[in-house]
Length: 216
Image (cartoon, rainbow, N blue to C red; front, side):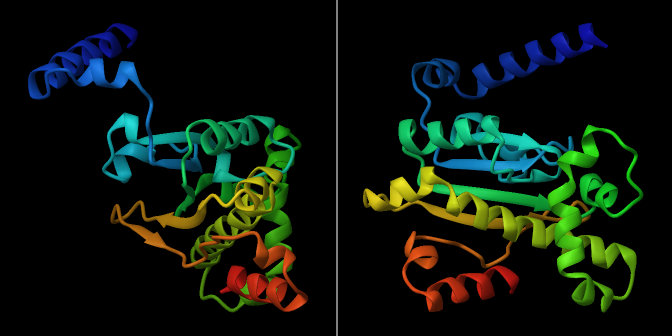
Protein backbone atom coordinates (compact mmCIF):
# COMPACT_ATOMS: atom_id res chain seq x y z
CA UNK A 1 0.00 0.00 0.00
CA UNK A 2 2.73 2.49 0.94
CA UNK A 3 4.81 1.66 -2.13
CA UNK A 4 1.74 2.33 -4.27
CA UNK A 5 1.34 5.72 -2.60
CA UNK A 6 4.94 6.65 -3.42
CA UNK A 7 4.47 5.52 -7.02
CA UNK A 8 1.33 7.64 -7.36
CA UNK A 9 3.16 10.61 -5.84
CA UNK A 10 6.04 10.35 -8.30
CA UNK A 11 3.66 10.00 -11.23
CA UNK A 12 1.69 13.06 -10.05
CA UNK A 13 4.90 15.08 -9.55
CA UNK A 14 6.20 14.28 -13.02
CA UNK A 15 2.82 15.04 -14.58
CA UNK A 16 2.60 18.41 -12.83
CA UNK A 17 6.12 19.35 -13.97
CA UNK A 18 5.25 18.48 -17.55
CA UNK A 19 1.95 20.33 -17.49
CA UNK A 20 3.28 23.41 -15.72
CA UNK A 21 7.07 23.88 -15.58
CA UNK A 22 8.03 25.84 -12.49
CA UNK A 23 4.92 24.74 -10.58
CA UNK A 24 6.81 23.45 -7.54
CA UNK A 25 9.29 26.33 -7.58
CA UNK A 26 6.34 28.71 -7.35
CA UNK A 27 4.72 26.79 -4.51
CA UNK A 28 7.98 26.47 -2.58
CA UNK A 29 8.83 30.17 -2.82
CA UNK A 30 5.67 31.56 -1.24
CA UNK A 31 2.42 30.58 0.39
CA UNK A 32 -0.28 32.98 -0.78
CA UNK A 33 -3.73 31.38 -0.35
CA UNK A 34 -6.94 33.34 -0.82
CA UNK A 35 -9.13 31.17 1.41
CA UNK A 36 -9.01 29.67 4.89
CA UNK A 37 -11.18 26.57 4.89
CA UNK A 38 -12.55 24.93 8.04
CA UNK A 39 -13.90 21.60 6.86
CA UNK A 40 -14.72 18.03 7.80
CA UNK A 41 -12.05 15.33 7.98
CA UNK A 42 -14.18 13.12 5.73
CA UNK A 43 -11.90 11.73 3.01
CA UNK A 44 -14.54 12.49 0.36
CA UNK A 45 -14.39 16.26 0.94
CA UNK A 46 -10.84 17.53 0.24
CA UNK A 47 -11.05 21.31 0.16
CA UNK A 48 -8.92 22.13 -2.87
CA UNK A 49 -10.49 19.33 -4.96
CA UNK A 50 -14.17 20.16 -4.34
CA UNK A 51 -13.48 23.90 -4.73
CA UNK A 52 -11.46 23.41 -7.90
CA UNK A 53 -8.38 25.07 -6.37
CA UNK A 54 -4.67 24.33 -6.50
CA UNK A 55 -2.94 23.36 -3.21
CA UNK A 56 -1.39 26.82 -2.81
CA UNK A 57 -4.75 28.60 -3.07
CA UNK A 58 -6.43 27.36 0.10
CA UNK A 59 -5.19 27.10 3.70
CA UNK A 60 -7.03 24.22 5.41
CA UNK A 61 -8.03 23.08 8.88
CA UNK A 62 -10.17 19.94 9.13
CA UNK A 63 -11.75 18.03 11.97
CA UNK A 64 -14.57 15.55 12.55
CA UNK A 65 -17.83 17.22 11.46
CA UNK A 66 -16.18 20.66 10.91
CA UNK A 67 -17.02 21.79 14.45
CA UNK A 68 -15.76 25.14 15.70
CA UNK A 69 -14.89 24.65 19.38
CA UNK A 70 -13.99 27.83 21.25
CA UNK A 71 -11.22 25.89 23.05
CA UNK A 72 -9.74 24.17 19.98
CA UNK A 73 -6.20 25.57 19.98
CA UNK A 74 -5.40 23.82 16.71
CA UNK A 75 -8.21 25.57 14.86
CA UNK A 76 -7.67 28.91 16.60
CA UNK A 77 -3.93 28.86 15.88
CA UNK A 78 -4.61 28.12 12.21
CA UNK A 79 -7.25 30.86 12.07
CA UNK A 80 -4.90 33.38 13.68
CA UNK A 81 -2.09 32.48 11.28
CA UNK A 82 -4.45 32.69 8.31
CA UNK A 83 -5.84 36.10 9.22
CA UNK A 84 -2.83 37.80 10.80
CA UNK A 85 0.14 36.29 8.94
CA UNK A 86 -1.24 35.14 5.58
CA UNK A 87 -3.70 38.07 5.46
CA UNK A 88 -6.51 35.84 4.22
CA UNK A 89 -9.78 37.73 3.97
CA UNK A 90 -12.15 34.89 3.02
CA UNK A 91 -12.85 32.39 5.81
CA UNK A 92 -15.07 29.43 4.97
CA UNK A 93 -16.80 26.98 7.29
CA UNK A 94 -17.85 24.07 5.09
CA UNK A 95 -19.97 21.10 6.09
CA UNK A 96 -21.42 18.37 3.94
CA UNK A 97 -24.56 16.30 3.59
CA UNK A 98 -24.22 12.67 4.64
CA UNK A 99 -21.73 13.63 7.37
CA UNK A 100 -20.73 10.68 9.55
CA UNK A 101 -20.04 12.97 12.50
CA UNK A 102 -23.53 14.44 12.34
CA UNK A 103 -24.97 10.94 12.08
CA UNK A 104 -22.99 9.81 15.12
CA UNK A 105 -24.25 12.83 17.08
CA UNK A 106 -27.82 11.66 16.50
CA UNK A 107 -27.17 8.11 17.67
CA UNK A 108 -26.56 6.57 21.08
CA UNK A 109 -23.33 7.70 22.73
CA UNK A 110 -20.52 5.14 22.88
CA UNK A 111 -18.61 6.75 25.76
CA UNK A 112 -15.48 7.70 23.81
CA UNK A 113 -13.71 10.96 23.01
CA UNK A 114 -15.82 11.36 19.88
CA UNK A 115 -18.90 11.87 22.05
CA UNK A 116 -17.23 14.81 23.78
CA UNK A 117 -16.16 16.27 20.45
CA UNK A 118 -19.67 15.98 18.96
CA UNK A 119 -21.46 17.53 21.95
CA UNK A 120 -22.05 20.90 20.18
CA UNK A 121 -24.04 19.08 17.48
CA UNK A 122 -26.08 17.25 20.11
CA UNK A 123 -26.85 20.62 21.71
CA UNK A 124 -27.99 21.97 18.34
CA UNK A 125 -30.20 18.91 17.81
CA UNK A 126 -31.89 19.56 21.15
CA UNK A 127 -32.21 23.30 20.55
CA UNK A 128 -33.86 22.79 17.16
CA UNK A 129 -35.73 19.58 18.03
CA UNK A 130 -39.17 20.99 17.10
CA UNK A 131 -38.02 22.31 13.70
CA UNK A 132 -36.06 19.15 12.92
CA UNK A 133 -39.02 16.99 13.92
CA UNK A 134 -41.11 18.54 11.15
CA UNK A 135 -38.83 17.17 8.45
CA UNK A 136 -39.94 13.97 6.67
CA UNK A 137 -37.24 11.49 7.68
CA UNK A 138 -34.01 10.97 9.62
CA UNK A 139 -31.77 11.74 6.63
CA UNK A 140 -33.49 15.07 6.03
CA UNK A 141 -33.12 15.90 9.72
CA UNK A 142 -29.44 15.03 9.65
CA UNK A 143 -28.84 17.11 6.55
CA UNK A 144 -30.55 20.09 8.16
CA UNK A 145 -28.49 19.52 11.30
CA UNK A 146 -25.35 19.59 9.14
CA UNK A 147 -26.47 23.01 7.87
CA UNK A 148 -27.18 24.26 11.40
CA UNK A 149 -23.72 23.10 12.46
CA UNK A 150 -22.18 25.26 9.72
CA UNK A 151 -24.27 28.27 10.74
CA UNK A 152 -23.16 27.83 14.33
CA UNK A 153 -19.55 27.49 13.19
CA UNK A 154 -19.72 30.75 11.26
CA UNK A 155 -21.10 32.51 14.34
CA UNK A 156 -18.40 31.06 16.58
CA UNK A 157 -15.60 32.04 14.20
CA UNK A 158 -16.96 35.57 14.00
CA UNK A 159 -17.04 35.82 17.79
CA UNK A 160 -13.38 34.88 18.25
CA UNK A 161 -10.99 37.62 19.43
CA UNK A 162 -9.04 36.93 16.24
CA UNK A 163 -11.86 38.14 13.99
CA UNK A 164 -12.88 40.87 16.40
CA UNK A 165 -9.32 42.28 16.29
CA UNK A 166 -9.20 42.06 12.51
CA UNK A 167 -12.47 43.95 12.12
CA UNK A 168 -11.47 46.53 14.74
CA UNK A 169 -8.32 47.17 12.69
CA UNK A 170 -10.44 47.74 9.59
CA UNK A 171 -9.58 44.52 7.77
CA UNK A 172 -12.34 43.34 5.45
CA UNK A 173 -12.51 39.71 6.56
CA UNK A 174 -15.61 37.75 5.58
CA UNK A 175 -16.80 34.52 7.21
CA UNK A 176 -18.91 32.29 4.95
CA UNK A 177 -20.91 29.11 5.50
CA UNK A 178 -21.03 26.49 2.74
CA UNK A 179 -22.44 22.99 2.44
CA UNK A 180 -21.22 20.29 0.05
CA UNK A 181 -23.36 17.59 -1.55
CA UNK A 182 -21.68 14.19 -1.75
CA UNK A 183 -24.32 13.00 -4.23
CA UNK A 184 -23.81 15.76 -6.79
CA UNK A 185 -20.45 17.33 -5.90
CA UNK A 186 -21.99 20.80 -5.63
CA UNK A 187 -21.09 23.48 -3.07
CA UNK A 188 -23.98 25.65 -1.87
CA UNK A 189 -23.93 28.97 -0.03
CA UNK A 190 -25.98 28.96 3.17
CA UNK A 191 -26.30 32.77 3.01
CA UNK A 192 -24.97 33.37 6.51
CA UNK A 193 -21.91 35.49 5.67
CA UNK A 194 -20.68 37.78 8.45
CA UNK A 195 -18.55 40.75 7.46
CA UNK A 196 -18.22 42.93 10.55
CA UNK A 197 -17.99 42.83 14.31
CA UNK A 198 -20.90 45.20 14.82
CA UNK A 199 -23.52 42.49 14.29
CA UNK A 200 -22.47 41.20 17.71
CA UNK A 201 -21.64 44.43 19.53
CA UNK A 202 -23.62 47.28 18.01
CA UNK A 203 -27.07 47.04 19.56
CA UNK A 204 -29.52 44.44 20.85
CA UNK A 205 -31.30 44.79 17.50
CA UNK A 206 -28.05 43.98 15.70
CA UNK A 207 -27.53 40.88 17.80
CA UNK A 208 -31.11 39.78 17.13
CA UNK A 209 -30.56 40.25 13.40
CA UNK A 210 -27.42 38.12 13.56
CA UNK A 211 -29.32 35.42 15.42
CA UNK A 212 -32.12 35.44 12.87
CA UNK A 213 -29.60 35.20 10.08
CA UNK A 214 -27.95 32.21 11.68
CA UNK A 215 -31.29 30.42 12.01
CA UNK A 216 -32.41 31.10 8.45
